[in-house]
Image 1 (spheres, one colour):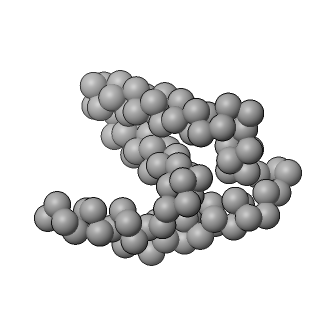
Image 2 (cartoon, one colour; image 1 turned 60 degrees about the vertical axis):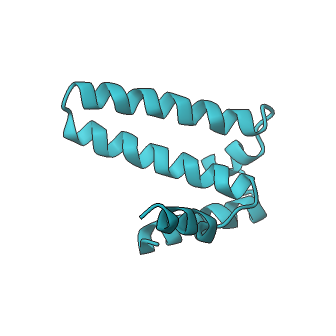
Length: 94
């Protein structure tokens, strides 16, 4: 798995354990909507990615793609999954 993604996931996991007050990640993990908060963000960011792609806006495509990856990693952490499960699934699809 990419080192940047591994490092980001480690930060997300740390936020899940420590729940700092000023952390956006912690606020998602403890949101009153539960996992629906993360699922809604994934839907929102996916729509924004589609619109950026439709407009051929490379900067926005990159930004929205990063938002999707981040929120996906938050969802994996929320579900108690690790990157190895994702990596194994991607490997199986090669």
